[in-house]
Image 1 (cartoon, rainbow, N blue to C red):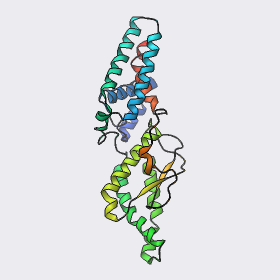
Image 2 (spheres, rainbow, N blue to C red; image 1 turned 90 degrees about the vertical axis):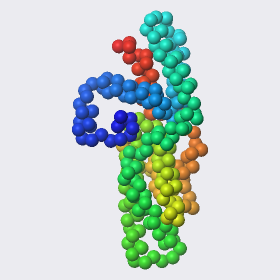
Image 3 (spheres, rainbow, N blue to C red; image 1 turned 180 degrees about the horizontal axis):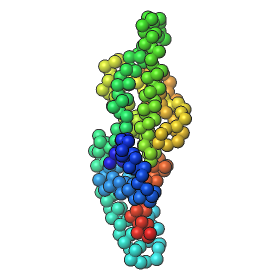
Length: 253
């Protein structure tokens, strides 16, 4: 599915989606797609941890409810979900890391821009140690424009229901993959630091990273985000919350 995979809809698909009608229909579709991701094991380790916690709370709540056929059916589904989640070991989920989480929506546009930026970053470093030729000075005038476009495309890749930590991980993975393939050839490495921004298309006023040269001080940059444990709380959990309720409350209507 395009939306769940982080891909934009074309004009016809967007029009159809907008005209689906009732919000309830869209919620049902989202629940179905979220459940499909779980069934196929398309989860990060952090998402699994969040689901395990939510599932356990669901089971505890059902155990306290008055016994009935409906409650028994919901509990059966919740216990089956628990068993499935337990089968998804961290090692198994990590083996999917090459395909999930999905790449950035605008990865194809970002790569050529990042390649174009690398020599300009090196040139900027040279400028601090001496004089530049007229041609080099002119070339540097493109740097800010390219950085702005990169920032825009990165922001536009932020998913609708994506937690900030999850997006940071995908963004850093994108940059690491680029650096591993191209940065060494150029004799440098593009890294990132946080800077304020008005917000991303998918979710509010979050911080964004600009590219800086190696050796420059980073202020809370995502370059070191690998050692940071993602929070299991946030707006991203709303999709899985809806999915959990689909296992139970949808048959109450």
